[in-house]
Image (cartoon, rainbow, N blue to C red; front, side):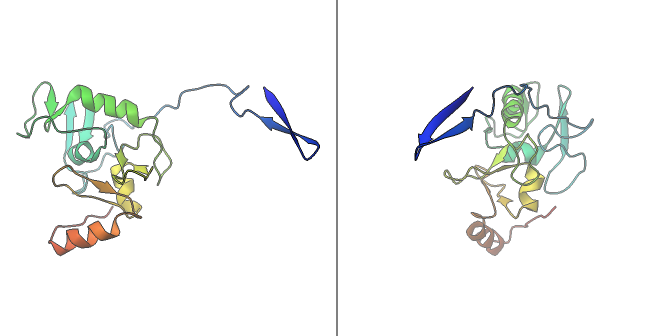
Length: 167
């Protein structure tokens, strides 16, 4: 449906962009054997171990860095319902949530790692965050920062002797 407005005596026509376009859900194609969160298969110190549960694979650090997850159990054990202290159903919900989030680096869906600065809308896959110059601090609540908000955190992190991994 189009709408017309009068501007300075002239009619201006605007198009509603969604109208007439086929609606289709964006499907995230995860390569077989890859992490359901970052879509990578390789082992890298930044990503952590590739864990498998209920036909899904996850890098341990992708789980820790995901913005929509919190660790319910701190014993770090994996059992029927938990991986690294995160409930399996919560991880599956996070994967679904990520399908609607585009990565600020690669522009693909599935970006579950968000900058913790409340006013920042940036989301990334964990490897894309480091490629874009951001960081995740694997301490406490596991905050992640985009490049714009990372400089102060990086200098504090490096000054304390923590390793900074790059992809």
